Image 1 (cartoon, rainbow, N blue to C red):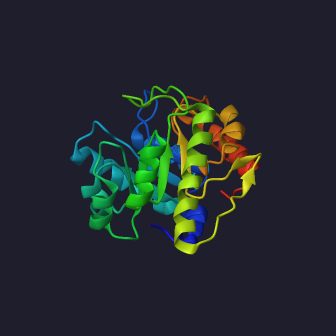
Image 2: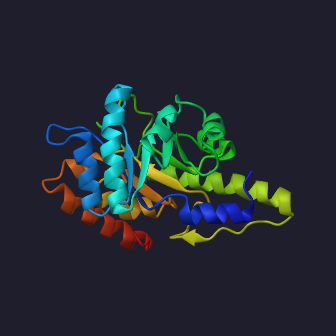
Length: 249
């Protein structure tokens, strides 16, 4: 389990307030979508190509890696732990049915960024204890960019999970140090002491309320790519997140 200092460090640097997940559309390829996000100012890109072969993935990853490097952005790949080092990714995001986070950590080492997907408090706590750096939590609402969706969380779901994580971590720290942790607050809600990223069907207008639930940031895809001017939409989203949380993106 993390020390108080490690938790504080993760809350500051574990993940940015905005993540972009690539998606293929009639207008844009996976690489195009990454380029759009970067041009719009996003500095964290996850390459997600669930149905592609390893060969196709490696080819796209090489281009996205180069783009991310040119923009000084973090490059994460989805699921394919065995390709992290080959494509030069900064980390990997793992779904509930992917390789366990603990096993991935053993293979990739302490410096690799590892994120996990969660829909329930129990899954989030398990990811934290397994050594995840952040948790992608969702879906916020129904989305067409991902198949086999878990139950929709909504605002109340995030509030509940944030409070549950804080309670769990507070108990752990109390048992280790003999002191009770007092959580900081945001609009009356606990700010999560571990990086939690809201994901799933999020649009520009949702951002202020989502950020008030105590999550660390948001991840999105479709709301950007479906916009008439996706680069401009990304810039608007960045401004909205910064206004809501005061983050330097």
